[in-house]
Length: 507
Image 1 (cartoon, rainbow, N blue to C red):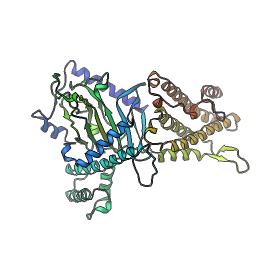
Image 2 (image 1 turned 60 degrees about the vertical axis):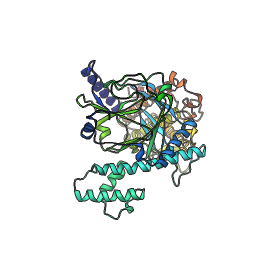
Image 3 (image 1 turned 180 degrees about the vertical axis):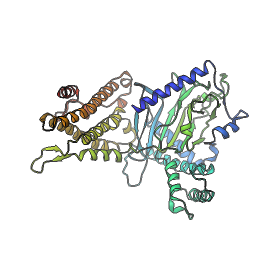
């Protein structure tokens, strides 16, 4: 509900902005313009740009080889995302790589990390080359982490105005940079705990969203609507689901030197249409000119502090194919296996086995307990299981790592289906007072009605024309956990009759 309200507000702002513009376009600057650097320093100072020659050549080679390896193995996929109740394929193909068990959600789609090599975690990659590609991205991640710390310190964006503390922090970062890793034990200087935590929370990237697009293979690309910047690979947006005020780091690799990069006869004012650019603007502002910054092979940029909240950015397509690695401090408070397993254990605390038999029963019928249990039930089904299997077998291109935790979540889900049936049995017994019973039924009706609505929605998505157009290995998986063929299912998968029965009980 909150997300839908946010989408409506965004659409209203966009409509208002376009109405104010009319037939005109807002001005924007590129580095070729005289006022570019002044504008960047005054209105876009939290954007830090680094040319490719500032990055170690060895790192360039490893990362770029990794991109090509993942592409060669077919690991990039266009996401079938949901916007305003409709499904759309993203023009950009993506793969998420990061800490084992992490996920990242955008446009109502939960992506699951292909885990990068992690000490103490057994990961079977489909090939040694995929392992090496993921390892290269960890090295890039570490490098960008250090660059982000340096940039934050360079702008004194650590949340403190005490110059003594700032000097200590600068010494701390120098120690960090020289040793190439990030630990409290690395600095001989005292670093305040709050400032160490701030640095760590805002720069320790836990995943990277890799993107790939060949513009010449796209039948259609949207035109940038406000400035007339040309073809967009990614529309204007704020990055979603990040730790507040955390830095976003982007490494760009456009496959330059192809015939597509040769000079064209196009005459767009401002940017060169053959070259990829990142576009920036102050959010919902028609007074400040935008920026379009060219991205060449191996360039990188950082969006520091609150820039992602106060500004919007887009990606403007060039002519050549391009990869990027976008490193984020994703807000994983509700997006890790550790979190969802904890939720399952919380719900299953209400299930008990009779000591004298194998019969199962519920420990409590309190409305708050039932509500919590059923909401977790919905979360497991719609935020995890369905999200994962809707994406078909794509993750098996890299590793089978997710199959075991998904099987465990399915087992938890079956137990929660059983718990729902136990609640319904208790309601039918009429052993509660009428007031308690009506309260329980009202609670159930809310959650089960939402469950049935979402099941219908997901069923329609799985059978949509867009889903059917996918290659076989990418089609939504008709996984047994949500079929009607399970003989041991305690509840009918279609809850319509159950809901009607509950409604009759309270009339």
